[in-house]
Image: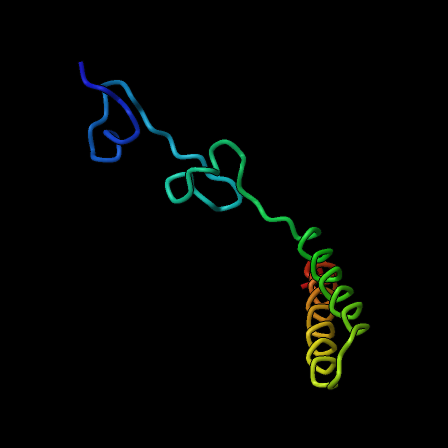
Length: 100
């Protein structure tokens, strides 16, 4: 009796009667990414946007401290503005994508 473990199936040994049917969700096939078959395939855009705003806020909070020079402050402000603008741009793109 042949074993049908995933390792054996990966090497081309498939038991008789074991029919594989690909599941396609939002144009992604389970042949390409197996996690699609059980629904664990997606992105979290709201969490990513929130994380961008939080990183920007943390960068601005780090302006208060025992800095002797101001070069650190310049980089913190540039980083905060970059994260804020990327998060805001993502929100704007998501709201206007249906109009295109």
